[in-house]
Length: 166
Image 1 (cartoon, rainbow, N blue to C red):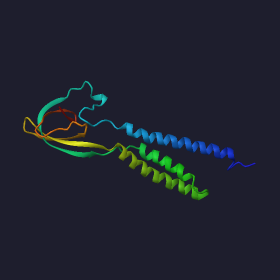
Image 2 (image 1 turned 180 degrees about the vertical axis):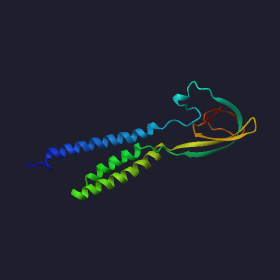
Image 3 (image 1 turned 60 degrees about the vertical axis):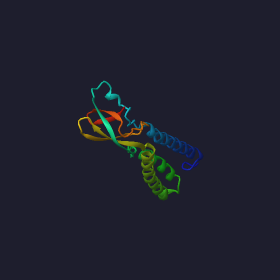
Image 4 (image 1 turned 120 degrees about the vertical axis):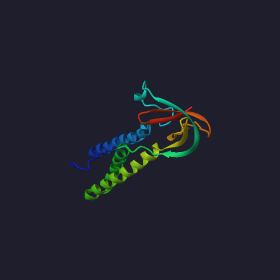
């Protein structure tokens, strides 16, 4: 009678590994849905019914920028889980333990890179001269507004958040 390596034990271990792999992949894919909008028309729920200051100005410059992706624990954890599971299938004994650790570390690094890359977005820096002469630059997600030089725009501000809109 075999206890370790029996068909029943390996099927159960294999099912557990597949289930963990699927869970990690679902978590990694969910990262892309967690990024909130950063454009002029995107508001967080907590901003509803809050008074905001509105100022008007003229667009002086517009340039394309990149908004970095998110860096949450989800990407590295999902990557570490996938890498650890993949590494655990290599070798046996002490070699298997080492492969599991190396797989988890490499997977964590890869998961972090995938999350950041998947949530990176194009942005726009809009420089506006306000009616009072003050010049402000606002960076936001590029929502296809195509702001033009000399165009009259409005800035909507509250507690550290500023948006450029029409």
